[in-house]
Length: 271
Ligand SMILES: O=C(O)[C@@H](CO)OP(=O)(O)O
Image (cartoon, rainbow, N blue to C red; front, top):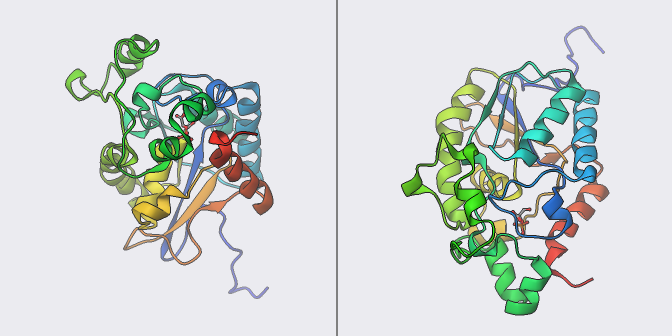
């Protein structure tokens, strides 16, 4: 190496790029039971805790040092973030929690087993509810056993307001509340050069990925994010869009990532 060559920088970005890392929470107790979860505040499973710790170890090994982290108000994402920061020895960085990064609200499907729902409504309908861009699930009603738990949960004391509180969300509606937070809060911090970690959810992160990669409504239907495997975006400094090869750079071996994505897709397929 000559004195002019530099080692590739693992963090923050350099020259014309910014870097940001995102991670879907580790497996939750409701993922394990194959239940539609959405805004229900499920805990991590033991496997999910391990996934979060492994994510932290992988980030540490790659030499990442964050300035700031964002997460939802749901415990599965919060605990994932805490476990990662503990592994990194970076528990003291500022963390901002927001309902805008929550999982999409699964409405009347909340608490239902995914395979039971397939048995009742058919795989095609359930696939549309899960992955279509703009077809929402049915609304949650007070008869749903988790309605009160969700609507009265003190984690929502700071929003959304009761009159905006969702009763269901499609991916489109999820993006409508996630994107303002990305544009108004996260982007300004990226532009100051802060290296950011976002710990959130399968569908709130699919919304950000759709936005960053300009994916069509059809393309995003095919994307399933694995639990607990961090991924990096390398963004052009002026457009804030990914540079070539800068999208969805998973920190894991490709075969493991492929298998984990396939497992998420197959949650509605009979074994
Ligand atoms: O139940 C949920 O909230 C989500 C994520 O776990 O499920 P799906 O992958 O089916 O959108």
